Image 1 (tube, rainbow over the protein chains, first blue to last red):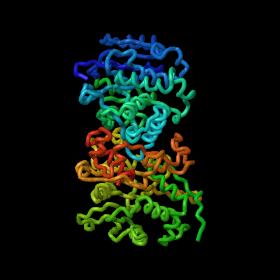
Image 2 (image 1 turned 180 degrees about the horizontal axis):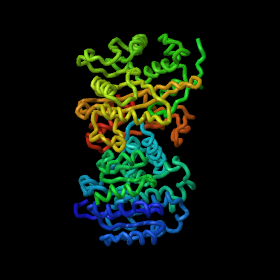
Image 3 (image 1 turned 30 degrees about the vertical axis):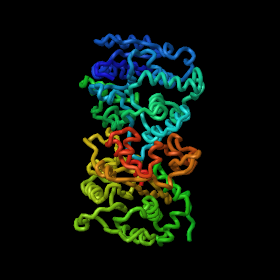
Length: 278
Length: 306
């Protein structure tokens, strides 16, 4: 990865994201994501997102819009939206032209300038993992996901299990590895693999440990391909995830990236705090 | 003799690393400990009996050479340890007088009800002292009165108290510890809460295990090995197997439902080594030494590396 190389940013937009933090998300990306190529929006509300983005009057023209079906095809339209969004990310290379694709959450804001050095080490992407205080139920939750995905990938999670949590709402995917991952899964499950391995109904939090695109991709790199990349503790300094009101209220807007997981956070407070940094 | 009715107990917020106490509580282990050590009658003070047995079985004192017992019940517990043939290198002090500590450090400290969850200077000083007294890799076994009331947030109080000291549970989420600018001398916290219902009165104590991690500079000189009792043959491979607790154990999402044991997967190259150091962890996981320090400490705290 050279310092002049560009990276496309893919943002999946759900219905609830449109009026939540989409504007600050996009503005922060344009201002603070240094290697920015194009911004690719994917949504099942393509026209609505398009209208919303144009209302922001952004001084940036490399913006493209896609519908879910344009990427996944009609056959997978029956899947739960939770799955569809993840599959879109795993197919992000199909609409991006850059070697690396950055997947950014629509409820995620980049607060500080992100340069290539924050994302890459000696030319390869850094793999970030999360650590918590112990005992930590959430880490066990993520380890459950790893155990489930190890069955999907049919691999022993030798490296990924202890590290446990690779959930980052700003994550770099390598298009070559995405394609290898799809081929790997295709060889095991054939065409339309999601219809064969996904649960029909996602109703509980436990159901949600059945899949996770970031974890799947990272496990593929660490345990299948056994890549020798730098693995780094996120330490809540690169990407901070805010789940609870307590976390939200105590957050001091000092990380590079912040993911506002809970859609009930007061977006006026967020905008006030974020706007001073944009 | 008396009948021990386990239905009197409820275990709330059981932490994943404290399964042993739950298992032990439901066996005769605790009762036998009390009987061997002539602890006062269960009827008189059920909670205290649990406290002693819990402290003993949660700490594995046989692995430590220099031990300190603190608090009013510390002397009694020291006698228990001697009776259990733990060793002779056991100090006792009732509380924190300045003369007692002439530079000695301990690998294991028991502290019975000396600390309360109140955010004040004296409590903060006790925490600071305790941290100073612990050797890296050492453990602090605390019992703390725990007020059960929905409006009293014990966890928040604990965090507030730890904030003003250098005793910080390992790698707390920084958004929760907003006033902290840097991670200091960290401790890994384990928590176990046991409630004894006696009529309408609920006596509670929180048992905590705090671990004092090694710093990077200490770990560079240290060599560990995998605890043999964790290793089991699974599909013709020798792998660490972790006991997860009773099978019908309930948790908020159902993660541990029907799971008695699980493999604690580690990289193959680590498992093959007879001796493991921080550089092996760093190489195996592809991390820098700072991150490897944390990971190594976690494995030690968990009991997998010794």
